[in-house]
Length: 186
Image 1 (tube, rainbow, N blue to C red):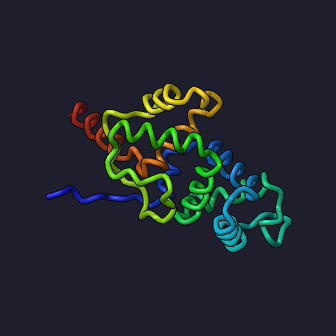
Image 2: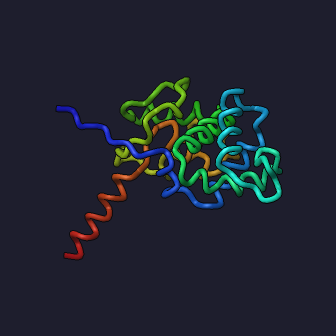
């Protein structure tokens, strides 16, 4: 019988993301709203209007990008829908990285890899099953080897793209690591 796929909500990514990098992603997406699809731009704008309070602005969407991004961080931490919209939009701002990561993950034979054209924000969340043979350092190295033009991409960007394109978080690796540590201590 096939193993049942388990998913974490998209906002679970916050457990694996540094605060400064979360702010970097938000700032990039909100600052490039003119490059987003009208649907994504509108959906992000509606969520900010409804759920984000920026001091000094009745409508948070009218605030400068930096203030709007800082005020949106708490929404990113608690809303799976907002995370999905932001990270899907962010991935479209890095098409070369997305294509390269898709190729790397395909070569590493990741299961259930969705085609690049799929709107991952519509998926049920992140799978918790991360291939044990792959770690972020290895995927970063593989991406650089496959596409040397990515030398300017940060390791954080490459790691986030692996998570997004692969639609999985390394959750089960950390759980197993914790269990092994507990067993060794006993």
